[in-house]
Length: 229
Figure 1 (spheres, rainbow, N blue to C red):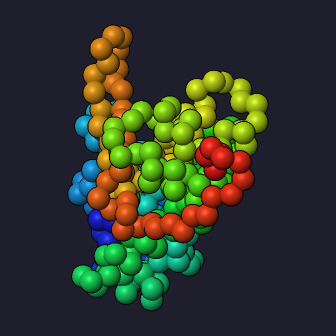
Figure 2: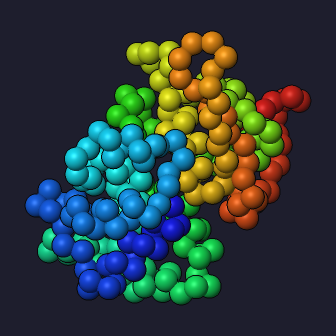
């Protein structure tokens, strides 16, 4: 995601702004500039190309996600239908600024963007509203490969989840609002393996090398012995 962000910022500077479509999206040529040069774990580029004759921004989910996060972080700003790099955004293009750019993206993803806007999951804002607890729990629980369901049960506060219309929606939210963004940021790694029975693949996650560089914790446990959170 850092690579995609740099590509968009560089393009905005090079063109003195990216002219948006009437709907406010990136134009196809600018979408392709980023889409063709990036990979997004969990999304198969070949499938996207096979299903679409042309690639619009809503077809290239990673590009759309990055553009919105850059705006939320204040690194890109829209004015009169043109998306321009801000002074802070231009500063992030310095070679030594990569760690700072990653930190800005990380903060914007989880604390400045409502991730429910992307997945159309009817569960309101869960589990994003206790992201700090989740990150600490992942630092303890995600040393080895684990599936999303196991990480959801061990790292979220399930008691804050109200009634849901379908049993698989909480795990779906865990993937789209926590695990997938963390993978794109390089904080987690993911792998897919063909299921032993049935169709499709199972996906597992574990901490990546950047996890410890992105977050650190000062934790004081209070309350009953054995309480997890």
